[in-house]
Amino acid sequence: MQFFRDVANIAIKYYPDLLRGVGFTLLISLISTVIGLIIGLLAGIIRTAPESKNRFIKTLQRIINIIIAAYVEIFRGTPMMVQAMVIYWGYAFATDGVTLPLVPAGIFIVSINTGAYMAEIVRGGIISIDKGQFEGAAAIGMTHWQTMFHVVIPQVLRNILPSVSNEFVINIKDTSVLNVIGVTELYYFAGIIKRQNFQTFQTYFVVCILYFIMTYTITRLLRLFEKKLAGKDTYVIFGSQTAPEAEIHIDKGGAVPND
Image (tube, rainbow, N blue to C red; front, side, top):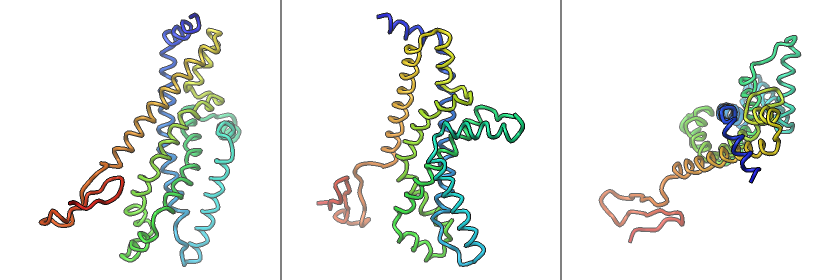
């Protein structure tokens, strides 16, 4: 069939450009997800910190919380494409026409967008931790930051891993909007290719397949990582080092005493 021959020809002829686009897409997505997670962790920790008794620090906390809340609402409530145009051309407007380097600009835009979503994901993860753990940490003299980094955050990271993985996959697809400022990701190269061969449908069909391969492969790998992180389905708690009957066998269905 001619259509599939055209698709194969596009993949063969333009594979260097397509691979370059895939590389930039994965690079921007990965770095932006990591930076966004760091932003989300900081924002989540600050927003869940107890109010200080010191009046100055208490006022400062409220101001910072208002700024973070505004940041989250603005970047979650506006399209990334619009954010890209405002940030990129806004910088050029403020600097009399000097523009940001494209790839760093793309990473910055996707990072702060991701950070707004991560902030709420992390905040929800922190809130889900049992309050008894906070009280226990406070009882032994740990500060809020010590409690977060040594007790809460390790649990939060494990709990929010599926959401973080989902954000990474979303970022792979959303990098396509960066073509509006000229970032050379996969969708940008698709535009160049279709203007050269005038085969719009065939070109975007190839690009669609590449996006699907990226998202499907990464989703499978992340699911495998989550499964490895969860540990074995069954394990044994040793109630005594000398009495085998004290062993408790644990599985997904619950605790089953050893017969």
